[in-house]
Each structure stands twice: as C-alpha cells, then as structure tokens.
Length: 226
Image 1 (tube, rainbow, N blue to C red):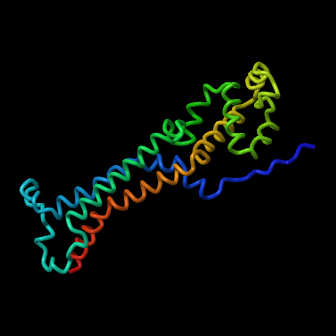
Image 2: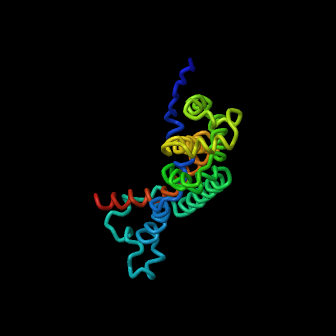
Image 3: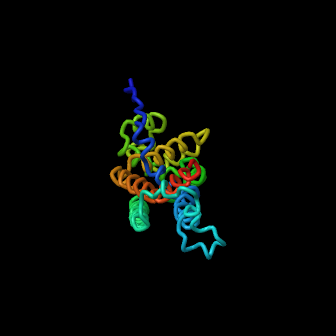
C-alpha cells in the first residue's frame, strides 16, 4: 500500500512575504503616483519660492490665520535629507529585486499569467525539469505527483514514454499543477533572506518618502481646524 502523502500548506509568512508581493507593489501605478505626491504637495502648498511659477498657489499655508500654531515638525533640510535617504533605500531595494528575484517572477505578473503563457508550450522534458525543482524545494509534493504520473521522475520512464503519456492525458490538469507548483516554489521558497531585505528596504523607503507629505497634511488639517 502506498504511503499517504500529507499536504503541508504554505504558512502565512510564505504566502504574504514573497517575490510576487514585492514585484506587484514595486511595479504598480499607485506606488509610482504616491512617490510623487510629497514633492507635488510640498511645492504647491508650502514652498513659497515657486509661487511666481504657479500663479500664486505657492506658500498657501503662510497666508492662513494662526499659522504659527501649526508649525512644521520637520525643517526643509530634514525633509530633503529624508527624501534622499528614501530614494536611496528604494533604489537599493530595486537593485536587489532585479538582481536576485527569480526570472519567472520578473517576467510574469502572477501565477495565472505564468500558467496561461507556458501551458501551450509545455513538454514532457520541461515538466520533468520543473518537477526536479519542485521536489527539491518541497519534497512532500513529490509523492503526490509521482502517484499521478510516475513518468515525471527520470528514473521511472524514458523520455519517449513520458512524452507519449503526456500526449495521451485526457486534460491539462497535471501540467497545470506542475506549473503552479513550480511558480509557487520560485515565488515563496527562493532566496527568502533577499525577499525580506527587499520588503524592508521598500517599506522603510516609502515611510521616509511620505514623511514630508504627512507633515504637510498635518499642517493643512491643523490650519483648517483652527
């Protein structure tokens, strides 16, 4: 009797802290727009030197009543220093991602896109290759796949027999499962320390980048309430 293989689901950390999470956030249009917000808000509402270029919009805060009670927490130079440091952190994070992230994650936006693009050109040879990686990173999946298709293991069948078995399959479910497992292994089980480093750099970078904008927002709300 074949030994029952126990499925071990990915834990919360692997599901949430992975290369796809970093890739999605770093490439999103929302993130790009957010990066520009502190610069635009600071220039229009706070920096009076741009007033002559914006038809009187610059320095609006200085025209408000009781503006002295809503003094900024950060000086101009502190904001510039924080902005520079934030951009450095984001740049280093992007270098780490571009250098160490698996190619599969950098090319495909998500697992559905990967399967959709790769399924039509899948062969027994590359399924075997993907299976080797999956077996090495997540050994508990090996038994389940071999029970469904023993030819995935190179020592179980010749490449010709494997190709014939794949062609005789009634559907693409096995190929889809192998592709999805491979993508998840690349995404969630590859260079974990680099993933944590990239997430930390991005998170800290965006926090520092938003410091000037948050201080400005606080002053605007303070003036409005006053």
